[in-house]
Image: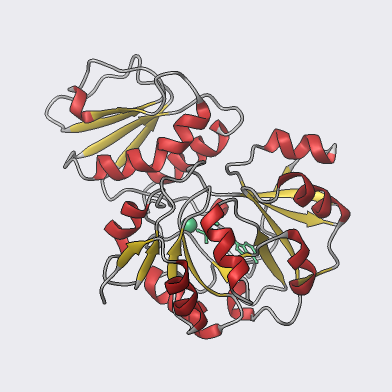
Length: 322
Ligand code: TXA
Ligand code: MG
């Protein structure tokens, strides 16, 4: 199959209406989208991503007004969060209505919903009469794509169309929040920082811990994920780290450039120490390093605050082995 990259919304609409799948831009990462009401499209996503069926999909809708069509018993806390942050990098786990096929949620009575903040994808969502399921557009376990080129590198020949919306503004996946009554639970740290959520709700966020083995898997629970093919090591700081001689190393640092390796083997995520910029550059840095033929990538943690918490989470998962 030939993969076209472009901005033809009509072509995407036709593919989606025929149970096909296309890559779509969002403000977080690119998604691999299909009709959320079509088990056939959902199955295709799992096949193309080679993703375990126990790992459910996020349902993208065009506005909060659409939610009541697909979700029920919506907590007040969820309504307050969507009012504050949608469209945006926040996913809410809510009780699903029967029209959402169980294939989209791996059999769970809960479904994940979000309104993405990207003009092309919002237009596409408005043009079809179904929501879109969209996991990140990468083979399972590998680095998420933050540009159309990343998607092409990983899925060329496997999907018909990549809607090119430019580089992703946030660069890291959405924050996932579930509820126990009115209490908000953090399932995955992400581009919307925890403090902003706590501030709106006036409560501290508790981290999700699975209560049974049968609970659906979330990437927040997986130890190894978002990973380059090259082995990766995560250190607190590269400042006093000694690199073993004889090993071809690439380094990814937060704001400092180091002299231990040649310039071509190092990427500084944000020379101006800006965590938002670091998040935006993170997956590109991992993709680029993976192409440099180094034997080991050494990355340094970023300050553990705001979106830095999600960056460190991704770096940790990328550096855990198997
Ligand atoms: O920013 C994002 O969220 C991107 C863009 C494309 O929207 N999507 C994304 O999807 O990161 P994905 O599939 O790569 O990660 C979604 C996470 C998975 O770990 C999945 O297990 C969890 O959300 N999830 C989805 N539905 C769920 C459900 N019903 N219950 C528990 N976890 C769920
Ligand atoms: Mg993913």
